[in-house]
Image 1 (tube, rainbow, N blue to C red):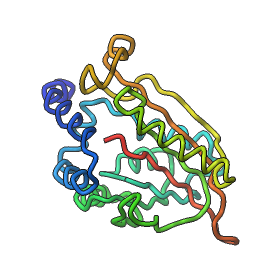
Image 2 (cartoon, rainbow, N blue to C red):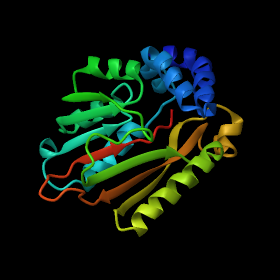
Image 3 (cartoon, rainbow, N blue to C red):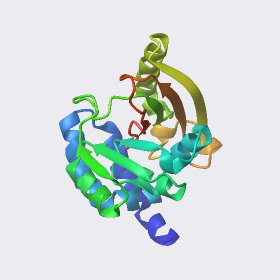
Length: 222
């Protein structure tokens, strides 16, 4: 398996590098639709760690048994987060994504109670309640403008009293760099990996008397 992943790595690096450069939403969703059948193998070759790291962070912060937690996996893709959630005892998982083909792959896992088509930034999420919000993103040079915009939005939510920051966790070995331009100096320092960061916030309830949901949101790197 390791040899197979290494053999496909140049193709994966080119594909992921292309995805990072797409800014038009409709083009991005079409790209993910086409990518869906090979997505899991590609990110495995890239040694992509965000799903496991995000669930680890959430598990450490959660009070109470995991099987009681209600999870909304936003931008769920093929369901890699759900795999990590189930391994830690989280059983009540629902997911949303903007790519029908990604949702098809996620549905085939049989780990979600419900899956919905929902495009982030274009439609409201189906469950606007309180709970914990876990987000991840890359921190390599090419992604810094996005990271800065994300953190500005998070700061605004915190200043408004809507969200409370619990954790900001830098990660050195996030995934393999797709190019020297993507990694900057990180390639030499981190064995070819780029860095990333995990954020965990507590979101205030938006409806009284309703049970809050936990939202895992890897605002998607790929």
